[in-house]
Image (cartoon, rainbow, N blue to C red; front, side, top):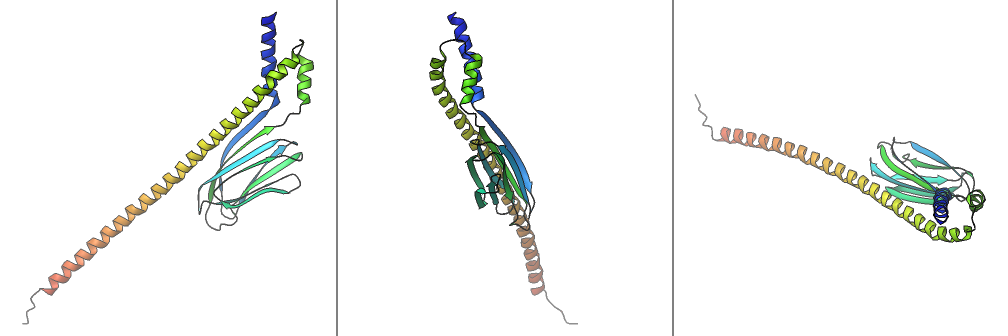
Amino acid sequence: MTFVTRISATAVLAIFLSTLFLQLASAHLIDIDAGKKECFFEDLSTNDKMTVTYQVSGGGHMDIDFWLTDPTDKVLSKKIRQSTGSVSITAEKNGRHEYCFSNQMSAIADKVVSFNVHGVIYIPEDGIIFLHSLCFRFSFSLELADIIAPIEREIRKLSQGLTAVKDEQEYMVLREKVHRNTAESTNSRVKWWSILQSIILFAVVGWQVYYLKSFFEVKRVI
């Protein structure tokens, strides 16, 4: 009977933890033409959490305008001409939350932006009551709740840590890409400048030889 009780508790614990908080994450890479903007949205409920991190990986001065609005078009966050940023919000209203990347300040340069969106869907505490009424047939519900609370906190911390590591890894990949593009561009410019210097050098040498030859040439008057 004890063995069966432990299996039931483990199953309920897994259901509880998977239902208590659901985390969403997505990564995107977009091209934004000069003078244009790209907007996206997420439908959030009250107390849902959302974090948007972004990095400009190419184009112009490597900067972009960003803003995030709630369902009433109230600006919750705005960043102007930044190459990287991170914005976290907790929804105060139900509805569509919109975030935009704007390249309208640029008339020529297109921009490449990589961004991640991850969040936590809030589930109220009455979800625990539902689980208790549905699954618990024993008298250890209070003890299980005492066990779940610290485990839940540790899992949340672990999830946040993994998200931070993931964001840092993606940031490092983007930075490596930016530095590689800069190095390749520099190498290309050095190569063509060296070729131009060689052409100029040969032209000057040829002109000097011709000039010296004509200077020492003996002119005969017939």
